[in-house]
Image (cartoon, rainbow, N blue to C red):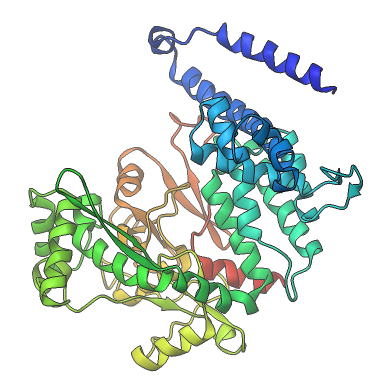
Length: 478
């Protein structure tokens, strides 16, 4: 399409959208299904618009490179950079235009283009992003998705070729298309796309995990920022291992007030109820207890608010990874793997607990001798499930309960890992109160919606959120 035709088309589409009534009354009169469809379509429109924004921003940035000096596109308009020019010209925030420029540059780097000064055809510098260019053209991804994929996959390195990165990019695009076409599903957001890209990069570049771990540790920081109103803000950037300790304490402090587990050990029930009845907000409670910890050390208030013992992380590693020189492990609740040296350091300092699992990740079965899952079973469930398995719920293992898929009373269900699953309190209550059902399907689980939600009661796969299970599945396929 010629440039002037593209601009005319955009003007026509804008005029059409402006003709749609944007009023509270118009949407208030709509049915639930219409609202849901309108929300889905608006999201799709936004991705299409963001794709065009990225392509435009990338071309403006290409015409504003420092090599042009004062003759650059942005510079002729009186701006130092393409980002400053776009912010002034579009009214967007600096964050939005920086994302658009990064995404646009990633798209332009994936195709052959004439040199900005000489006009000579330049081979693509990031050809592995070609599938992402096509996904943007199809309206699957917007600017933030593109920037996330580019950042998550990184550049080729030792043992990681451009062809392998291209295959990873095609996998991400195919998964997004499949998700967007599934009933009740949507294209994953940019954060999930970034995590998926990082997962694929880690699978390709296991030897580089230690390097990336060191880079994250080097980025750690704590800033104290006085505020004009007399308050003080702390900005604390943590590497995954450090975050594991902090989030363990934070969950212990606030979990009952944020919808944490109900079915806890009797010795912990009183403490959980005390936290739940505390008049302070979760944020105020966390602030006060962390201040106590800073004042007196990790034993402060331990029996009342934190439970026994100091902060701890649960590091999980498979036997296969221990037998591999470049193997890695996972800190529960963190999305990035840790290197073999970090695993060995924890084994040396803290010892280990061995859990034997079957190919589906199901260990242990105590029949009906106990109503509640044991601590070891909960550890096994955490390793297998990685958090709440209901849909895209992001509640981690510190915020979930063990649910018997065979009802304890009605079905005479047993307390086992194989017939148990982790759910957050909200989704646990929905299962019990709204007629949802969970069934075993092969090695996994499926969610059966009640007829009022889906008259066909189409089974919905309940994927594991555990990176350990993803590792095991990948090795079984390999």
